[in-house]
Image 1 (cartoon, one colour):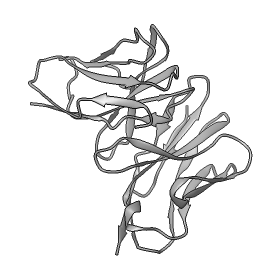
Image 2 (image 1 turned 90 degrees about the vertical axis):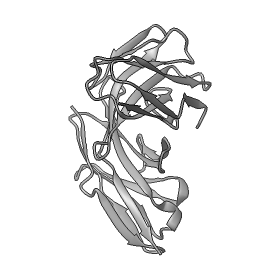
Image 3 (image 1 turned 120 degrees about the vertical axis):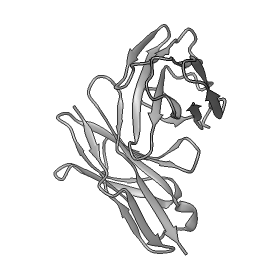
Image 4 (image 1 turned 120 degrees about the horizontal axis):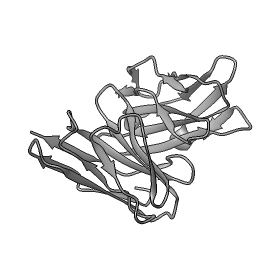
Length: 110
Length: 113
């Protein structure tokens, strides 16, 4: 994992519920990222944070929210406003750009 | 804005044969280039990266890539593949002030015995 941990590995939710995905890193790097992966579409950036208490929208931020209260933690909340939340979610960290990825959380919403 | 194109969605190859996975990028600024590998149901692992200097970059697992600025390419090569190399490979580009990585859509390398 390169010092970055995502939990849980699999997550199931009913439509209309918010759900929070955990991402923790112990490499003491400033930058953390959330990506969404769908078959045939590669990785798309949801949110990123380059410093504690600051984060920026990526390319597909609608329906998602994040917080960065601690350097080592960058949780992602998938809200009920996200139209198509079922996907594989990957967290990454790095000094300046994403170098280490977690093993991902596969979210299924029915 | 940067973009990355991986033209081949799947590359079948026999074990011990050479392989090249193609990656082309577009950018109006100097770029950093990366290749990642993803095994099933896992995260991405960095194979190699080009930041500056020598255009031939060597990575883990016997892979290498060559940065070609005139052709805006960063193709990944391995002289002899193993069954264990079967995975999805992603090319990515970073450039500009935001430090964001833009990924290609991935190439599935399928190594057959």
